[in-house]
Amino acid sequence: MERIFIIGYMGSGKTTIGKRLARLLSLSFVDLDAYIENKYRKTVPALFAEKGEEGFRKIENQSLREVAEFEDVVISTGGGTPCFFDNMEIMNRAGLTIYLEAHPEDLANHLLVSKTVRPLITGKSREELIPFITEHLARRECHYRKAQIVYPIDRMITKDEIHLTVHGIKEQLERRNAE
Image 1 (tube, rainbow, N blue to C red):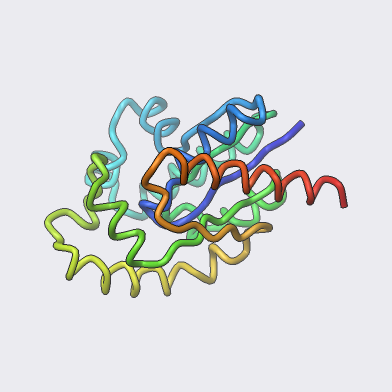
Image 2 (image 1 turned 120 degrees about the vertical axis):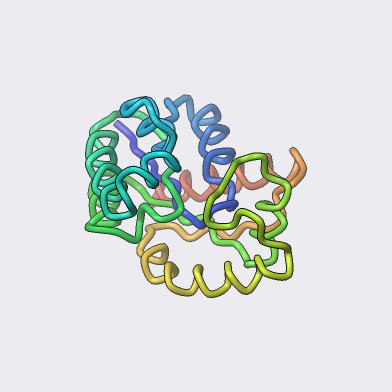
């Protein structure tokens, strides 16, 4: 039985890396935000608007507890998931946590080309985005660093770069399992 949780800031590639890693390891894949949206039949932004951040974070915590029971799975979380309640402890107890660590400039580049709607950054230019990410990331870093593996990522824009990252993570997992 294997459970791997992918954490990191928005735009770090959690879903992209998680899907490919799951495929490479012959595991199932669950995106926590998609799980929540399917369960509540509403988008995450709609839940946020309806219930407020506190209400959404309670839903997220309960949903995390549910997916933490799944077996043979890679789970990508929302960027804020590790920062609330005892979510990092839940993930670290249930499986292996991997933090995709990225520089604010790289995150800004990812977010600017992403097709995903992210209410926190809507309407921000690159010049506004980098200081926003830098400040926000600094507050979240203490939670992200509780991950069992910290994997630095760079650009991850091309398929080759994504492929190298996924295989690099797989090698780290194999070394860890061999210990």
